[in-house]
Length: 69
Image (cartoon, rainbow, N blue to C red; front, side):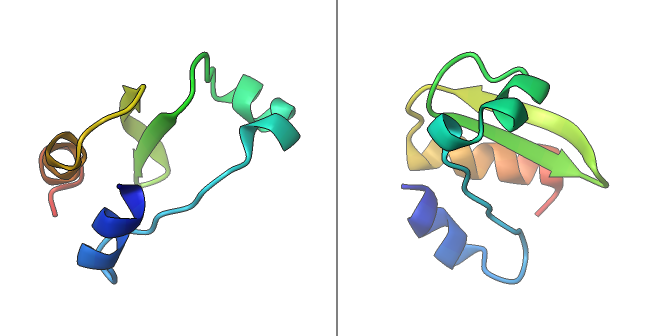
């Protein structure tokens, strides 16, 4: 799902994946409590977070609402 959104918004948003099981310190620093978790940043600050499986529509809506894309 995220890969589809990444392709559609190529050049407009940057999508970065993280293997939570091999990066415990990073997930702990960001307070990730459940998987999957999508964290949206704008200007280096977190502006939104989606936890659990989210459909494409919800991800796209977060991009539009929180990132202004």
